[in-house]
Image (cartoon, rainbow, N blue to C red):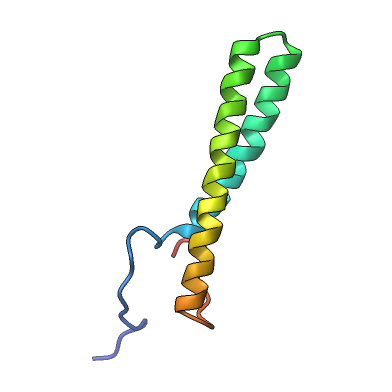
Length: 84
């Protein structure tokens, strides 16, 4: 019996890093835009909330990039899809 893909062990914490990267980028862009719009509309509490969420997205991006770099060191030459 042949398999279409080889079996390998997947670490659940780093299995969807590329998808997390895309989602964190979307969160950063959208929260930054919403913060600017909220401050322009004179709703500072909403602007501050969106700005805090944008900062959280930046921190998440840093963590994701560090994990992706570690994965590249552990598995050189392996290409990962968006949902892997």
